Length: 301
Image 1: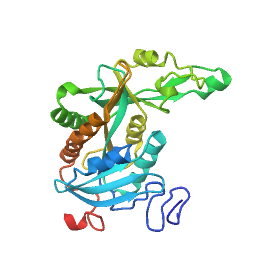
Image 2: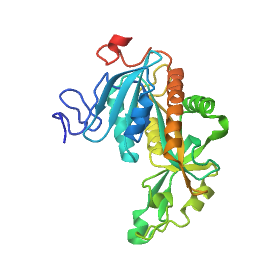
Image 3: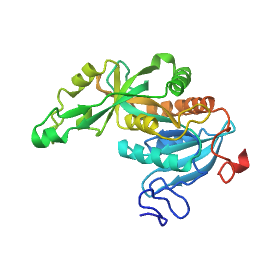
């Protein structure tokens, strides 16, 4: 249930200035954001911050942790799964943060390239995969729609890839285009008998259409799309929102392998500092960013 009275049905903000789903207000979210799906992963990665200043779990399941790393504010936000949750997160973060945003998603994926469980795939771009309801209900078109890839920010992606290569070894870091499916099962080509999904040839179709297709997941296309669709004025020559994405390979869809809990835990710990270092290198000062006055980091700067 909502915890505060909302003042506007079109752009819901509470009387305290908090957004409806994430429940954060101005000064609680940094311009540098690491976003993940799993709240336990968020807590694990946030433990590598030098100091935690703010933690909040919303009634819609979003977890926000803001702290300091090398003297600069960084937020870690767990959003759950799916493109709708990514939409809530990006839009509501934009509502409460002044200045440009740099957002890195560190998530999990199923590999459809040479990368195997325990490796990392950096998304240079992302394409959308959607179930075509007209096919299932009216017999029209293909059962799944495939959209043109949207590019990640090249500069931020380059820094993230370099930092992760240094941390886990370049031989374990791959790069390519990733598919953002609207579901975990049907739209990612997982074959089952409980539902009529008509997805037996989907992975082959994806590989044929996108030469550098490397992974399947559920959030990055929406992240990249909203960054490109953002209307904020450029600050310091930067777009309003810049984004990158790196994915742990949990499921090797080619070799039919799945990561162990121990390897997942180890990889998250190694990657945390690498992504934080990338965000700090990308935005090395607070100049032109959200003002410290009234923020949770005001007394630390």
